[in-house]
Structure formats: structure tokens, C-alpha cells
Length: 283
Figure 1: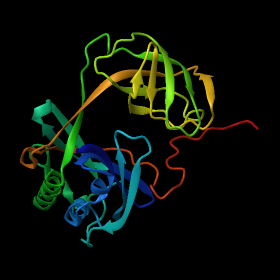
Figure 2: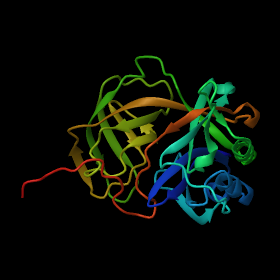
Figure 3: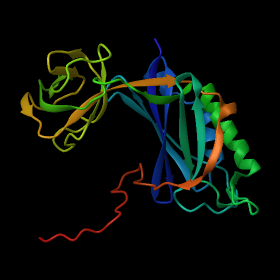
Figure 4: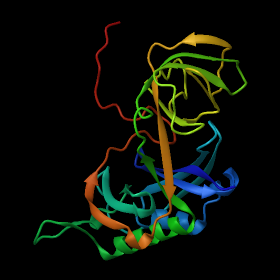
């Protein structure tokens, strides 16, 4: 049965990095990790030659820590154009009318020449070559079963946040039981929950969406591998029920919105990443 997989394209631009996140429908993790070479070529041809596609990380949306990394290290052919200012992005609108959603995709790593504005009216516009290459990119994405994901609305009281008060489990079993306070009725059975505000130092990976394995009275079981056996109180943490919908898109309906800027962060090759401010510390 086909499932949805999260696909992260990881690029480097100079000593910084950025990602493009997509979702893909496939039968298994291996099929989802098999990216057509034509799609890889299309993903880099619209960018400056100094921007490199380093790797693609694919993970199962239904199984925690089930992922695969495929290295590519590919860049566009040399164009002779200077790279755009780091963070400059071409914003594209990708509609998925079957689920009533539109996703905005920020494409970075462009040529400086391709970032254009009309002298007469001040409107941003796509130069012909960039427009062609972006069109090929989205066509390849659609052909490879890449999807648009949207967060569907859930009616109260199921939409409210529930505070997590305790986590319990046996090390190595891959199952943890969360105790919570709040409404015990969920819209879906079993539901999918979105966890936030839990300390990443105490409970690494306990963040994001988890499909519930079982629901009890004020308890919910999730696929989380605890390192220590026992029952532990959680001072801060919460979750709410969510429902994600996935849908295909028509590349013909993808449209250009504007040129904008988005910060680039740490390189996928490692390192501490951006340090936006300097903090003085007394020793």
C-alpha cells in the first residue's frame, strides 16, 4: 500500500546551507529514495554553479527514525553569472485544489542575473531561462509522485492543546506512553498528534507529528524509543491532534509570486551553523 515519505533536498551555497522539503508517495522507503536522475538534473539546472546539491534525505512519515540518505554532490554547469546574494529566493505558489491548499516554495541558490524587476512598474518577473528551468523542475516533481501536504482543520474540542505530564516506557522497545491532561476524546481513531515544547536535551526526537499506536484514559502510546526504563514526569510539553492531507499538483498551475529573502542556516556537512548574535558569559 503506498505511503507518504518526507524528502529533503540539502544544498550548500558557499559555506552555508539550505533545504527544500517535499513529500512523496511510494510503496516503501527504498522506492521513495530512488530519485530519477532527470529530477536531480532539473533541481540544479536553475541554480548558480556554486550551489551544490549535497544529498537527499528520505524518511517515513509513519515510522520514527526510519530514514535513508542518498549523496549526490551535483551542481549546475558553469554559466558565467555571479551568484545572487545568499538567501535570495524565487517564491512559487503550488496549488493543490483537491485539498484546498496552496504551498509556497522558496527556491534559493540562483544566478544574480535571474533576479529581475520591471523598470516600468517595479514588479518582479522571471527571465525566460529561469522560467523554463523552473517549469521543468516542477514537471519532474509531479511525474515522480511528489505531493503537497496541508494541515487540515479539526473542530474543537479535539483541536485544543493537551499538556503532557508524564512519559513512561521500557528501553529498546520503541514504544512510550504519554500521560496528559485535557479532553480525552479524539476525532480520529487512532489520532495523529503534534508534540511541541518538550525539552530536546532530556527527550531527543520527541517533537513533531506521531501517529498514535493506542489511546487510553488520559494516556496515549506513540512510537518513541526510550533510552531508560521507567516513568518520568515532564515539566513542560504539550500536543494537539492534527490531520495531514496529501494531494498531487498540476505543474501547469504553478505560478510565480515574487523574489524574496530567506536566511540560510548551517551546512548539511556539519558545523555549528549561524550564530546571529554574540552572548557574553561570565566564567
